Structures are given as C-alpha cells and as structure tokens.
Length: 92
Picture (cartoon, rainbow, N blue to C red):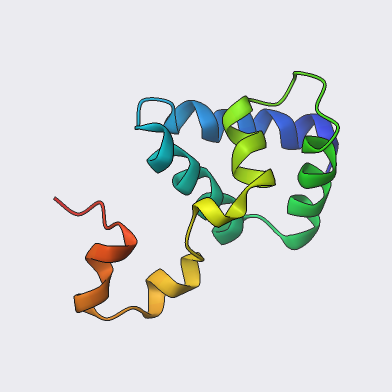
C-alpha cells in the first residue's frame, strides 16, 4: 500500500476523532491503528511520521510518536467489567 494512501486513511481517522477532547482523540487514533492496521502499515506510517512534511494530521503524528498516551486495545478486549471503565468505555 502506498504511503499516500496510508496518510489519507490516517487523516480520515483523525478527522473522525477531531471533535473529541485531545487525550481521547489520541487514544482513539492509537487504538484504531493498532486494532485494524497491519504491523507493516503501522511501521510505514511511523517512519513517515518521524519525518513529517505536514501532510499527516498532527493528531496522527502525536498518536504514533507518543504511544504511551493509549492503552493497548487487547487489554480492553480481555478486561473484566470492573476494569472497562478505567480503560475508557464509550458505552452510554
């Protein structure tokens, strides 16, 4: 997959999360990239993010370069009900 397509897709993800508070947006972007993107896609985007030329949304760059902002999505999947709230459930 071309880097241009990865940039476009990542920017669409950032666009979705733009209305959330920044911390939640960063976690949401990180979670999405780790849950649905292949390791190769993430490596290519991470490599590009470290040399960003302004094409990649700043939220994506931050989510990629500072992954400690988010919990691993697998932790959410295996968490019991007592932990889900701590991990950030979006259930109403």
